[in-house]
Length: 144
Image (tube, rainbow, N blue to C red):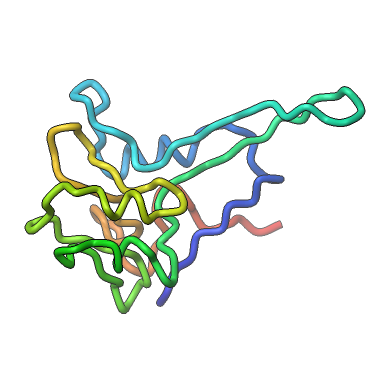
């Protein structure tokens, strides 16, 4: 079953629950210098009428259908999981060139720690999750 990530800014309240779920699911150790795969941002946008609009953004790897990071990797560390559609990596051969990060329109590829090779959120394939269960950052929507 293929998965997609959809971010609806109109429903976002900047609570950072998606980021907290990601931290937990990926056993991120912030004290050790780990970087969270999902980041949340808020910004104020000035309106023409003098008012201000608060905009909230949740950003991470979007597991693009035609992920430019895959083609950008000179050593073939990135591929698509045929079952889930997630962009997956094997950093065994990673040379740390950051070509994947430069190709990504979301700036998602990075390292969990500054001294490590590239890493990425693995979505539903990480931890005890299965391909049929949603990742912690994007639980299934509740019924209206």
